[in-house]
Every structure is written in C-alpha cells, then in structure tokens.
Length: 262
Length: 341
Image (cartoon, rainbow over all chains, first blue to last red; front, side, top):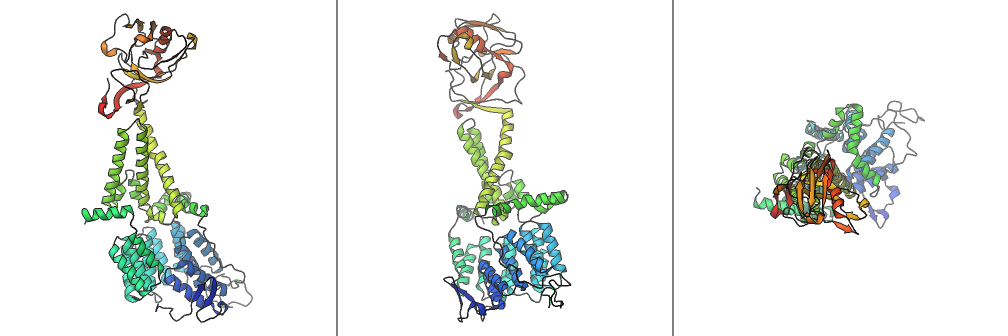
C-alpha cells in the first residue's frame, strides 16, 4: 500500500517468530519503528496489532507519550473502556496533565457514560499546553455524547490544526459511526477520500457507514474498492460476506420496502 | 534531564519534573495494559452496571444531575424507550414507521389472543410472547448500549429486561385486573343447563365484589366443610359455582327433591344449577352472615356410609366471606361466550 509509511520496515510475525523484511533482529528496531508500525496498523483498523506495537514501542522507550496515548486509544477502540480508563490513569501518573492523555481518558470516560469525569478531563486537555487534533476530537465526542451543540464545530476545529490529515477525518467518522450518525460520518469520509483516495481503509469505513444506512449496493462497491486497493484485507471480505448474510428482519424490511415503501 | 511532558530541563538525579511533577525515570514502569478477558463475567457485568452506576453517582452528587447525566446520553433515545410502554410507539417517534406499526400490531394481536384464551394455559403462553416482543422492542431502541456488550452481556440484558417487564409491568397489571374480574376454569361440574365442564367464567374480584347477594345469584364460593362428625368422608373442598338459594335468616327445607324457602317454593330462576334429589333431605336456617347455597353442581366423591341429608345441610350453609363473587361472563368456549344469568 503506497501510504504514509510505505518506506518503513515493518514487523511481520511468522509462526510466532519475529523477523523483519530486511532480516534485522527486533532488537535493532527502535521505538520509532514500532510507533510507525503501530500507527500503520491503527490506520488500517487493526487495533489489536496496533496495541501490541505501541507496547513494543514503550518497551524500547517508556517516555514515548504518543505510544501511551495510542494504547489508551486502542483499548477504547477494542471496547475495553474500563481498562482504557485504568491505563490512562496510570499514564497520567507518569505524565501529569498531559493534554493528549487527558483527551484519551475523556474518551474512555465518555464511553463508560461517566460524562462528568469526561468533561473534566476534556477541559483539562484543552487547558494543557500545546494543541492537537486529537484533543478537539475527544472534546467533540464528549459534547456529542452529552447531546450538547457545537460538537461538529470541535471536529471542524480539529481539522484546522496544522497536524491534521486525512486520518483525522476517519477518526471523526468512526466517532460519528459509534454514535449511530452514519450520514455525518459519510461526510467526513468523503473528505478523507478526496485527500487520500488510494487508502483502502477509508473505503472500508465508508462501506460500513453505507451499510448502516441500508445502502447495500454502495456499501458493496466500497468494500470492493477497498479490496482492489488491498487484496489481502480480510476484514473487507468478511464485511462483504456479512452483507450477504441477511437477517430475517433485514429481509422482511427489504421486502416491505420494495412493496410498500419508497 | 529534560521532561518529556513539559520540556523543562531538570537538574540531573531528580525523580520528578520540578514543573509538572511528571516522572523522569521510567525504569520499572509496566507497559503491558491489563486486558479484559472474554470470559470475565465481572467485566461484562461491570459494563451492564455503568448506567445505574452513573445514575447513583449523579444522585449522590445532587438530585437531578444524576438523571440528566444518564438521560442526556444521546446514544440511547430514552424518550423513545419510555414511550415503548406500548411497543412500537418509541419506534414511531423515531420515524421507524413500519417496524413501529408491526411491533404494535403484533403486541396487540398477542394481547387479544391472551384475552380470548383467558382462563386456559394457552393464555399464559401468549402473555409470555407479548412480554418477549415488548422486551425486544425496547432492546432494539437500546442498541447503542448493547453495542458495547458482548453476546453474554446482551443475553443478560435481554433476560433482565424480560424479567423486569414481567415483574414490573405485566404482573402488576394482571393483579390489578384480577382485583376487578377473575377468570375461573370450571372442572368437575355436574351436568346442568347453564354451565358445563370445561367452561371458563369471569367473576367479581375483591374490588367489585357485591356487598349483598340476592336469591338466584350465580356465585363462586369456597367449600371447606369438615364432615368427619357424620362418620363419613366427602370430598367437597375447593371452589364451586351455584345459585344462592337462601339469604341470611332464611329457612330452607329440602325434602324428597322438593325445595322450600321460608315455606314456599322458590322462583324458577332461583333454583340450583343441578339436580337436588341426590342431596337427601334436610332443613337449615341461615345465620346472620350466612347464605344457603346447595352444592348441586359439584361432583361429590362419597366414601363409606354417609348420612347425606344432614351432611349436605352443613355444606349448604356458606359464610359470606367464603362467597368470592358473582359470575358475570362466560369466556370459554368462544361459541357460547356471553353474559351468564
């Protein structure tokens, strides 16, 4: 995949033995390689692998704040909200009032429905020195979960940050999809595709959103497009298969829509 | 030694940053996060617990803040969930018209079926199906909470919702209904022109039970008479249905199949349901809180030698508190459904 990290050496796991493409041993890889590999896996929605690489990165260098943030984010993406909150607390003991860590904790709290704590953490992240798209995204999620206005302004603000790129749009889309606002997610995914049309994962996410909206045909096209760009992406194949496995209610809804609905 | 958090250059040898108190040495810090086990029930229950927990936390902090913190969660359409007291209404409110109408119609059909089969075991199954449909309607609205749960969590949530709905809504409503009218399936009835074995009737519950009865009223009453003193054993315990023959103070005489109330034959519509000839001969006077009801519709299970007349005289005197209510309506079979007089 000609992406952001196409020229980096990535870790491959073969039969439990770890080697690299260039034949280097894992000891020679530094934390930056692992961080890049973790980001790459994250960008392909492989959160379990990404979490492992973030951990490897920290094994090399425990002072890598992005890896701590990444671990908490991955735990949240894996649905382990309690663990994410515990881990963010631990990381915050090491890096007091770090803005990105606070934002990650805010996300964990909001997924646990502890809105008050989420708001406090988000406030703390915004007051912390520096800025990043992630803090605004977490802020947007907190406001979205609380049913407050201006959450979309936060998401737009995150994209105005200098460090923002196409993947931040995907992150926002994932947040929207989590809160069952697939149409909002589609808006950001279209922007992401305009910026990075060659990234299959954006098409994969788009397929999810279209499927959530009942647009089975376009969803199938999006998954196909993803597979064109990366043929070995098994998740897209599974998603395509899932589209074909219609539940009874989906079938009934489709039949009734065909007969009496618009 | 530079702090990675705030960038301050600290004096070498310090453990924590002088400005932000972040750690400067990370030698023994664990970097492997604790993971949730797929089979750790505690974690799954913990996820189920978070909604009531946030409510309790909020309540402890101060009243309505708790409610707001839970119900302001835009993931779950709480207003639609509460509106789902009638399944489908929440879906209609959310704009899912087809599913809403289907749910509502299905629920109504099940309730009507339960009503039509009231007094039979089939009715219970229809009620259970209605509760299941109701629980599913609510669960489908709470999909956002479910998305954070695994299969086990969803199962626990479904069972809890089913149990909660049954115990919190259907059972109380059923009890309320039974306070007004009670269904009674009839079994062991002697042949008579009004009621037959296998019929089901409705009679007054505690709230609608008449204070006074009239001669000829068809009533449900409880027979609990000890006949041991008559050197015989007659199985006549349980609920029975028959007409009131005598009111408090009335003298009732039965002799060779002829019935006299206060010395006169009763009106035709006040005669007992079944044949009175097998009841023998006796004469009783009802006390101030007693009615005379001849057990003509009960199949008597007689053992040994029995002085039938005196024993039936005892059985016929029924205290007022054992008269449960007036039979008003026949609900089974459907072909003969209607008021009973």
